[in-house]
Image 1 (tube, helix red, strand yellow):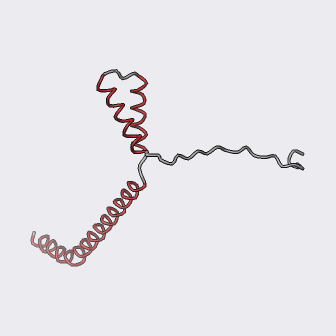
Image 2 (tube, rainbow, N blue to C red; image 1 turned 90 degrees about the vertical axis):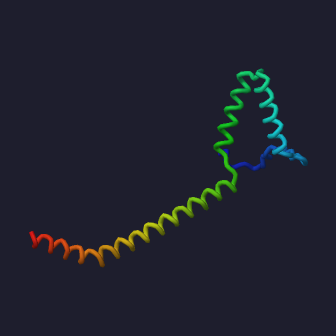
Image 3 (spheres, rainbow, N blue to C red; image 1 turned 135 degrees about the horizontal axis):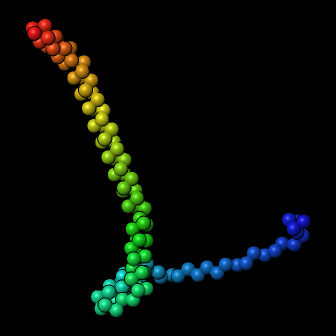
Length: 115
């Protein structure tokens, strides 16, 4: 019976604050500089070391859209080149088998009959 309600229950409003001037690259640069300074001074705590390792894993796993599209285009290009090489080798093998094999067979028969 809970599905049939006569009144509408309002949903809670969300607070979404969007900053006007957000420079993510600058913030990341400042974080890296602070991290490097603490490592150079030798006063890095275990928490800072953990954060450094964690951020290294995060940056390795996440790639930008441009990097992913570049890698996929490179993979596609290498697959096309591989396919072209396979086709060329198949044509070459067909040529060798069809045109040179009968002559080779005749040479082998002559050498066998001479013995």
